Amino acid sequence: MAKKLKLIPFSEIEKEWMKDPEFRRIRKEREPYFRIVKQLIEARIRQRKTQTEVAHKAGLTQEAISALESLKREPQLSTLCKVATALGVKVLKIS
Image (tube, rainbow, N blue to C red; front, top):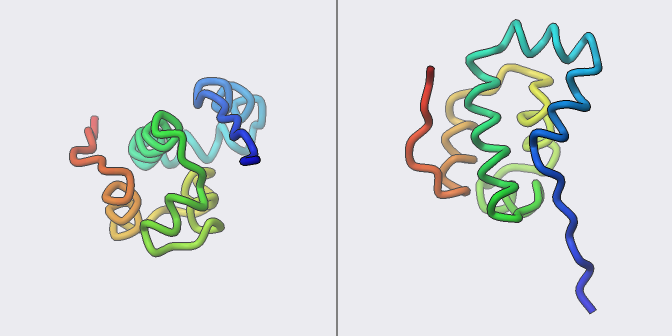
């Protein structure tokens, strides 16, 4: 029997992350990237895909997706494009 996947809404994840002062500092520092990454996370969750599934389709590792989603380092444009393509996200709003 397949294991049922439980995905948490991004708003709940973000709320929990915002309790961490280090995350708040990084988010403020990397706000433009955060907006794009947030869209990618929301798309992944809406599609009920795991980081591993997206990583496989994008030709990346799960660890790379995790680092991207947690903003542990500034993402490269090529990585953002690979993930967006893997998720079928055609337009990323940058505002």
